[in-house]
Length: 197
Image (cartoon, rainbow, N blue to C red; front, side, top):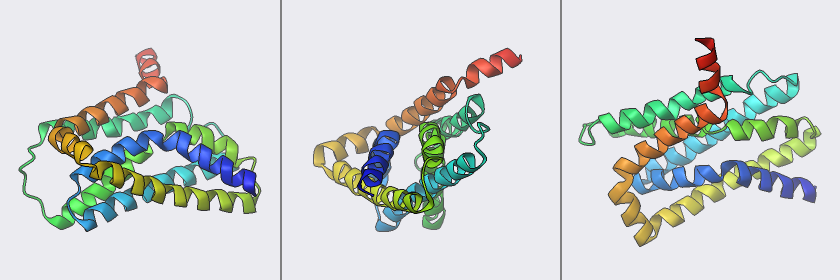
């Protein structure tokens, strides 16, 4: 049991450390409690979908979602980054739409940057008994809460908050675009698409 707790913690941290930076950027832009809850909800939805995909992958012992095809998920943050660069900050949107958009954005970015999660989760899940799997998923849920709290703490530091607030309108799109291009490149998607033509 102790080894599962430690292994699950190490696996989550190693595959989700990049999410901490993204969470800090989202936290710096969140002004209300409802927006922070949308960020947390988006993280749960994103990680949850990655876990479900990994469970199916482990169950069928298939490589269907690995390789260049998973790299296509990189198009999502790339699109979000470009859209964020060209859209105006002063656009009027209702709070309801903003909350939905924030939850969806966090979910999509978490899923799109989850190629490493899938690459680790799928083979690891094949080794776990049902009880150990439930324990691991409980650890993942606790780690999501921990990452959320840590990102809020770091984004709340005056120097970090000033930096993120001042440059987030440029930093967020640039990070998304870089993330999208990295996913497409690391998974061999560019190479596969060029070979197809």
